[in-house]
Length: 362
Image 1: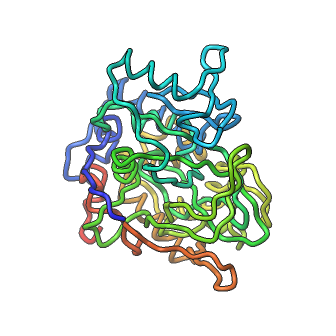
Image 2 (image 1 turned 30 degrees about the vertical axis):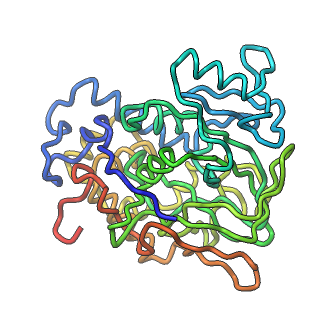
């Protein structure tokens, strides 16, 4: 399975947050930044702190930025399932037929033509899906996605060991653990939605390195209440591995489930690498820009605004052996087959130059 990938332009709010002297592009961070830039930066820092963002209480149908809670999944959540709409329970098929007539919108592909992808981090949240699909970055202009809440056995959701440009904090990763059980969300995407999701995750078939690889997990156990158990699904695997805190992988505090290690909040995960932050200081003009914040908010600000220091800090996590790379024990019986994305950690070719470190060798 290989999908065509389009290069998606970075959001303007992120483009203007890049370091003025470290990048080829001229940044608006130099000198007196506009109030709009400060507001965008503040909002992005808040995203980093709140990751993986607020989730719904149960399975829902994502329709053009709105979540409609499922009342009944049925055999086919896009056909005989029912959802709550304005206090009423409505059959999904009837709802989508009416939506198509009123919006002159094509009827979405059925479940049989969709790809089930495990969402374990921000992709489970309505807010993240809205930013990805209800914007100029998704040319089709509409998205209808069943998002089903489930439980995955033998895996835990951990802090991944790299800092992302989008919000400056640690993203989530998935790691095998025979003693764990974690909440996951299954997103069922059509071909165009898959293309957009790949682009948002930096999956570039022509790049020798990437943040994630994308592939299929077989012989897994994902139970979706009121529907069925899934034994195979697709997933994004973080090439940087899982962050270690006090020598152990660090499960996300905000993700429900049973883990063998103590759960760790985003604040605690970032605080645990303060020595790395101090060892690799941001450029002076970035320090000045971020001085209005303190603690981990300041560190996130630095990561967002200074691509080179962000890369140095990520590289240090690997050099200091604070990571546990993705692996599946042979006795687990679980199989991962990579389909797209490089196996080597790094920025994909699709990564915008305006967000890339301009130092030689970066």
